[in-house]
Length: 292
Image (tube, rainbow, N blue to C red; front, side, top):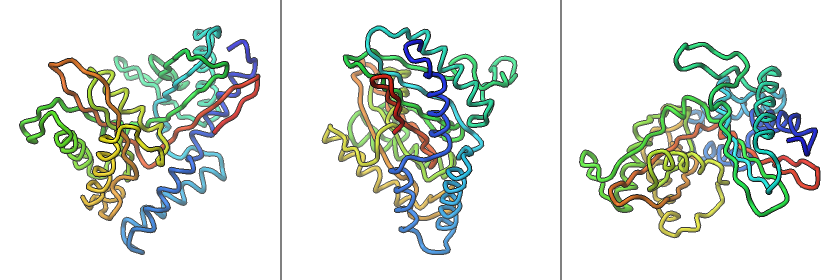
């Protein structure tokens, strides 16, 4: 982004902060979960290890997880800046962050099984640009690990196997089914993002986008807000617990959205995020950068 000569280095620092330091609301949720578990239980021990992991990563500026994940960027920008140049700078920043060990070389050619060695490749990083009617630039970054990505799934309603219809009850059934099927895999306790509607691609993308939401952010759709609360409560009665060792905390948060759909289709997509919910925001305004 030639308007800001420091842009590439800003993004490197943005990646570092996202990789090594959890957002406050996520860490608070883990603290609350630990307080709910029985002292000395397997769940309590797992959460103790997670908290120590968080402390060491922050103090030593090392990645929270050896799987630093897919780099998912959303860039909101005013009219004018070249998205091609911004994209090039973001790719270079990912290479540099990999060189500095803030990221792991994670990009593997799906046809040859060869690792690129520098952390970038086709759709790695994945960058989405959207122009908006503001002068500042807002960049959101999510580092999405492979283990939790493997736990994501999609349903087409009605689902006769689960007896789930095209209604709120049916949505609830399939999202709980996805959580139950994970059985602590994907480094639970996890965060759940879901989307109702859209086509297969847009539905999965919108479900993953829910992980950007702060945990205290109330859904503006009353029906979805109530559904999120029910799913959170019911998921935490499954006794799957942290890493599947049993306990009272299977999920740390549930966020949902919806998209319009074709009459013939009714997809429900579920995105699972591990306890290391690595997401941050970067703002550029009047030539200055801020990371939240």
